[in-house]
Image (cartoon, rainbow over all chains, first blue to last red; front, side, top):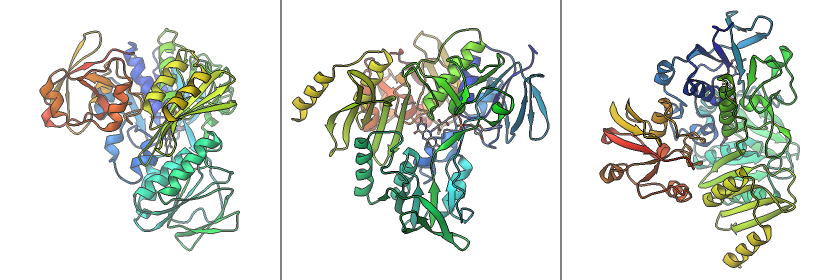
Length: 403
Length: 106
Ligand SMILES: Cc1cc2nc3c(=O)[nH]c(=O)nc-3n(C[C@H](O)[C@H](O)[C@H](O)COP(=O)(O)OP(=O)(O)OC[C@H]3O[C@@H](n4cnc5c(N)ncnc54)[C@H](O)[C@@H]3O)c2cc1C
Ligand code: FES
């Protein structure tokens, strides 16, 4: 098998970085990336920020140009889906029944949206937002002055609401929980974002689950569990994702909310690695296993797996971080705030420029920086180096500058 | 097509040719030039695509920085007057012959 190629499943952030890192580390054997989408790998975050409202063209979002793959002898098999992995014979089988043998296999299948499967969901004008093709389905229904409903008030839902609002639509966000962003952030940040959207004219409705989509051919309204009905010429659903672990599970690999890997991207098969949104990994900072949906996570895991395949140990210990762009509000998050018991706010919420520092006892866990890049970079440095910061001093600083 | 000369933090030089219309960050990553991590993929969020343009004329031809780019650059210890974030540098035919130095990793 030594001469078989390294094969990656999924052609996106994780596998493109894997390929780049393998070549950078001097791997000169064959390299094949199989991807279900027909397009050259592209940047996914712009989907909900600028691509949906066509502020940026698709070719500007490509991760690499075609010439990159040609020049570095990276074979892309696009529009092709892997349907099974045979660990006995070290090969994968595609939908077309073609088989490809591998020396090492890297699973980078990402995640897919959780489907609501509600009555009326097949109506025109309703869509999810994970792939470029999803934007193409939605774009014809986006029109100034018309109504949009976003189902789900997570980061992707709120970004979509901001983009549609900027495009001049009348926008309602319906969120099933008590507050937007409930699963991912503190009540303070949720309140801030609710207010930011409301002052820009978005209607935010919480404690309301979509129960039915109403219309003839096209969607006309979204019925919710609160008894209300919201007019809609377009509906974007963003209620979370599920990791694509089916292939791995069918092949008998360990899967628990993501494909289980260690800090080198190894699964329990020495020839199979997994990276990106589809993985469940040991987090160096929280000392727990977790699954993350973020580009930096995909990229860093890819680097670790590539290094390991090339005989070098580069454990994944990068600090998790994330960003979100809504209107002119840039959020940058360093670290993971799970388990915090105290928050110190620096700066001024009214000016839409502040940061929230999350602590467990005296230990700094994470920082949400809103239009406060300096605080983000500082926090990223502190957390990466395992340093804390004196909570009391931070509080006093804030009083000095704002008291 | 325009020609660029990129010099990494260790002094290795790369001569590259590229189409106009893209940005400087993708030229560096397409050519596997080390030192441009581009963690955020060009969203002006990470400051891991820091470069220097030493020739003042060439620097001026790149146009003004956005406030966000300036804010990110201000956070870097290695920042200079000649600093730019590569993902915010759009390439037009005015950039033919541009010489780029990649900043050391912090
Ligand atoms: C709208 C939106 C906005 C986002 N915004 C941000 C943001 O601001 N910041 C941030 O850090 N992250 C953001 N994310 C998350 C980020 O895009 C993901 O973390 C990242 O794309 C993960 O990369 P990946 O390579 O692991 O998987 P993916 O990008 O999900 O790619 C997996 C690929 O594998 C393919 N595939 C799956 N199964 C198979 C198979 N059997 N055979 C062949 N191919 C297969 C899929 O079609 C897909 O193309 C956003 C995501 C979305 C959808
Ligand atoms: S690539 Fe992240 S700021 Fe340029």
